[in-house]
Every structure is written in C-alpha cells, then in structure tokens.
Image: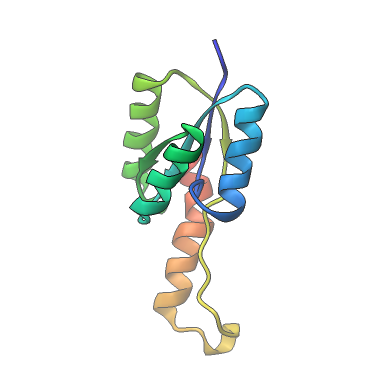
Length: 114
C-alpha cells in the first residue's frame, strides 16, 4: 500500500509541484485547498490527485479533514505544510486584521496540521 501524503495549499504553484513530485515518488497524494475549486478540479483532471477542501487556519476543520482523509484514503504518513497567504505591505503599515489572518493561516495552519 502506498504511503499517504497531504500537501496543504496543494492545488496551485509550489504546492501543486510538491504534489506531483510526491506522486512520482509513489505516494498517494491528497491536495488540501481552501477556496479555488477550479484549480482543484484541474489538478484532478491533469494528475488524478484528489483534493479536500478545508481552512488550515481552523483547528476543528483540520481535525475533521485529516480524519476524513484517514477514513477514505488511509492513515496519513506525511504532511507538507505549504499553505500560506500574503498581505502585501510593510509590517508597520499592516492592519491588525491582515496580520492576524496571515498568522492564523501561515503559522496556525502548521500547528493545526501537526
């Protein structure tokens, strides 16, 4: 049985490239994503890689998403914490809400997926 890997932010860009490399190395790959359904559908069409939608910044969503993957695909062996967002601007000009959202996803997502 192939090892199972979840790649957060896995449907586009660097995340998609990571998914494809892991698939090429023999992993069963699950791409996690938060919002771009078209990219998830395109990834599936191009590679056969399955995508699961949840917000990595939401702890409960991560627990539920990982549990669903385990139940439907198999135990998760590898997690690649790739998901991240930017709110362009220098720190001293960044709003609290932008800062909080960046930290919730970029840092909180790593904690939530651990």
